[in-house]
Length: 379
Image 1 (spheres, rainbow, N blue to C red):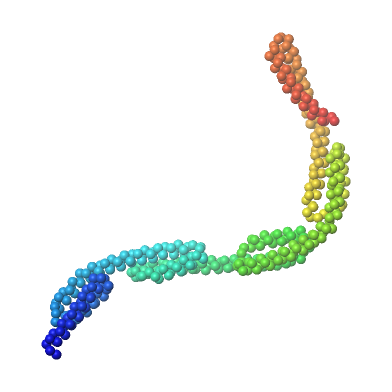
Image 2 (tube, rainbow, N blue to C red):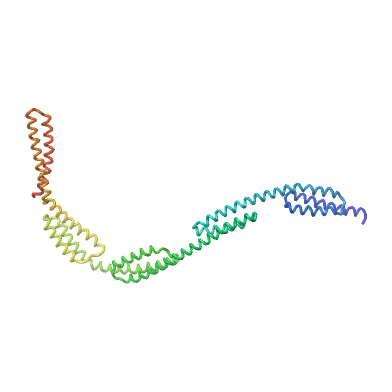
């Protein structure tokens, strides 16, 4: 190799080192490397430059590498500050998650709560760790809250399951009673029994949704069978009782015409008693006719009772005595006022005369009313 070739070779080696140094400086300035990575690279390149067999200003390359030391210090401080800021943000996020978890742990939101705990756990795993002591303490609180919630949830579900099992057993017992009741032909008591069973059913609480639907379908079918049978029998009876209804309506029509014309209370009571015997002897009527017919019978009875009460008031000795006393009192007052008016007129006292006549007119009105009342007692 000639001297020129050797010089060119060692010059190219320097140029390669120079490119490597410049590239490292550029990457460090751009922040492409972390401070630790940059220091490691600088030491590697420095070693290469220090022992290099190359032609060029190696000292200048080493000096350029040294200029990176202050920059790395600044970058280290910036990285440290960024890490502290990130740690504070992570700590705050985890503390918020812990508070939410502890709140959830005491809640009774069994459906949404478990989903929220899953989401919080995923969020926790996505966050970076902070200092070990703080991180472990926060995780302990979060984990404890999650465990507390899970245990309470399991206990709640166990209690719900137990209550549902009790409700299921109660409803199965009700269905058993309903089966026995469904064969009865004592329609009134049996219908009342089914109402009682319905009250028990509502008080039994809820079984699981699937069990509740199946049990209710079974119970409802038993009720429907009973009431359908009752309806069929009642419909047959209604047809049989139709003639009784026609006869009773005819009897009522006659009584409603005749009874009001009876003025004597004893005769009216006797008429009503005879009517009632004939009416009851006609037997049952269709169900939908019972209330309207009963209302008409009650109206007749009320008419009889009013006549008897009127007669009692008219013949009441005490009331008659009070009426007589009232007539006598008013008559006495009118006599006194008449005498007073005559004396006033004799002495020319026109004002007294006028006032006395006005009082006489008032008392006369009262007297007429009292006499009319007394006349009721002597009819």
